Length: 248
Image 1 (cartoon, rainbow, N blue to C red):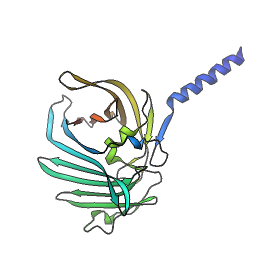
Image 2: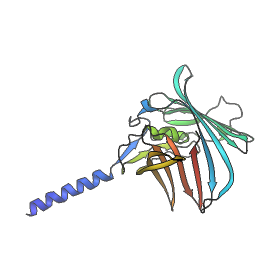
Image 3: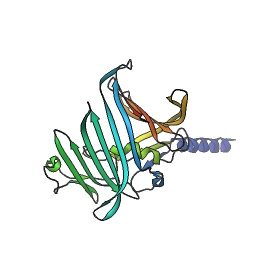
Image 4: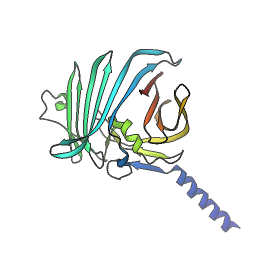
């Protein structure tokens, strides 16, 4: 009897650990379904609300374009992001990434009225690009990339490449922002599956992907069931909500 009880405990322990298993996702282990990368343009309305969901501040329009392009004689993926604020161009960011892994190759961001920052990704380091005039990043030291990172700025294009199959899945994604001092993994969970209303009488079945920032802060992403395109984001941070809604 004790033998069977012991075996049952082992099985339960195994199943418990299996349910808690987290899949690492980076630019090397081939977990991303790169063949699903969608080329073209999308637009999002981005706005803030208070806890009563009254809009505060000014809304922004984010234009995002994904295309193939040549970079230093090699075909790459080009992510082109433009942010408009108060009807004016605010930030224009361009990332070039490896065509097969999305590993970053080059990053440049023009913040209008403030200047430009640009980096090269060489080997296991992110280095300020010394060939870019007036590069504000030149004062920074190189960052050692101890894990194969993916640019956090292209998160909206990366989520559709995740191997999502069921609620409860967890992914540790090696997202990295150029402003960070070191890379790390960030945990996302397939939190739920529900219908999202996207128009009068129109609903889309979506997976909900969640990241917990800690201290009650979080973000939810609604990914369309068919192609995992991000249709909506709801983020709570320090007493305010931020929404991103895909424009059609």
